[in-house]
Image (tube, rainbow, N blue to C red; front, top):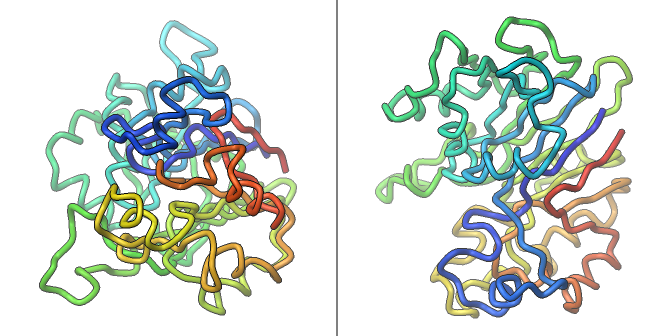
Length: 308
């Protein structure tokens, strides 16, 4: 099983188009210590030819162009994209579907909650349902994704809820938790059905309850939410008014942060993904990057490929 990181940044990418923070300035100037990154999305394959997309980044066309694994390989019109699985309805996880409107067969998997969001916005009707079937996923129920024709991809996926928050544009400020429900923040366990190799993909998570820590213990590979380094990062840098917790994300550092939460879990490979442009861990010569690496973490970058 191969896992390809198409995009590793949080919403807005790195550098963000309207941000002039230190990291974005360095990335925009071509500083080799501040490599640009597109918005978060990965792809996985069991057979090396048909790929399951995990989240459809707004930068998806650029990402497909940048990675030969995703180029057409046979016929006048073709694509190795066989199916897509959406973990939530965030803009940076669904907007890329609009770049896939050229009547190319693939299947879209999501929870009923996400499918309702897509169905409620007529712009997503550009995906011809005759070519792109929409299939509903139940939480805590493993399924075997298949391409548009129904041929299995050799993978098993289990979606399960983790602590988090509803997408910003769906928030209800009059409701508890802004109207968030379990399906608003979904993690994935992806398994190669032939070998049993597996990994976890958790691009958004607000805390590490005991049951989640137990589930991740001893995992061979975990991609985990790396949005901010500190909870008050955007407030301190003057780039925003919300904490990481308010946005539904754990900070990397601190006593209650991700690095501390993973310290005793014996995860073989730990990869931060969905990293905000303000996070100093994006900068390769920063103390924060060195601290993350010393704790056994890898900072995902676009084009990274891992095998299990």
